[in-house]
Length: 81
Image 1 (tube, rainbow, N blue to C red):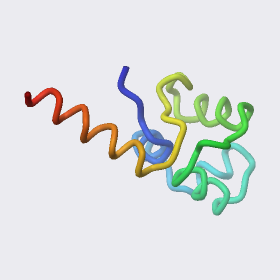
Image 2 (tube, helix red, strand yellow):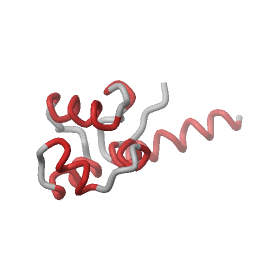
Image 3 (spheres, one colour):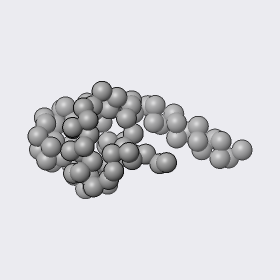
């Protein structure tokens, strides 16, 4: 299953950090922090963002941004073999 980072999901929804944060009732710096590391995001906030971005929460990657990049690189390397 392909997963999107919180930032990618927000950008695909056409929202700025401030717009998305206002939409779910958090400070934009809080949302920005979760876009870098979503490993400790609350389920309720994840569900709110999922609804705002109009994608299932299962499609959102939970973890540190660099981990997602590493996973994508590994998948591409395996596909190239």
